Every structure is written in structure tokens, then in C-alpha cells.
Length: 93
Image (cartoon, rainbow, N blue to C red; front, side, top):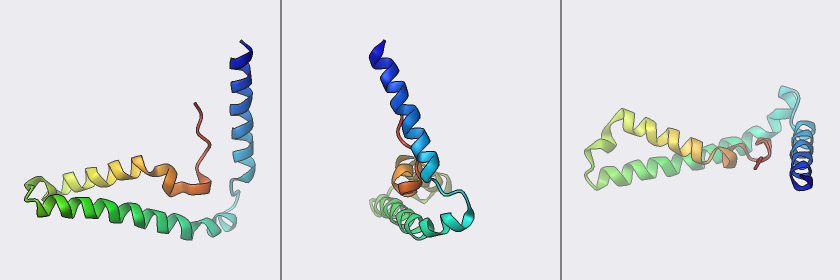
């Protein structure tokens, strides 16, 4: 029981620290936008490279709008923590 309680305390502490350092106003958040924009650009460029590669291999599905939308969505979900950077909430086990 002691280990579980200690883990719960660590989770609460991590969330409290994240809440404290998270920007509260739009003005405070502005300084994070260039980094978020650059990370998003990197992720989208990787998704485009994958779609172009699959299209070059002759995969007809790669030309489908829905396939491309799915690739972008999967890349965003996989790399969401990377994109959000310091604004991302802490990982809770």
C-alpha cells in the first residue's frame, strides 16, 4: 500500500507543477508558438515524405484524400507530445 500511495503523491505533485508552469494567458503562450510551429512542420514534412514515398512505389491508395488524412492524423497522434514540447502535461503511469 505504501508504494501505491507514494506513486499517487508523485502524480499529484507532477500535475501541480505542470499547472504552475503552464502559461495562463495568451501573451505568456506566445513565446511557445515558434517552437510548436517548427515541431509541427517537422512532423508534417515526415508525413508528406511517407505519402510521397508510397506514391512513388506505385501505391494507388497513397493518392486517396482519406488515406492522406489518416496518415496526418496518425502522425499527429504519435508525435503529439513532441509537438507540444514544454506545454505537454506530464506522463502519468
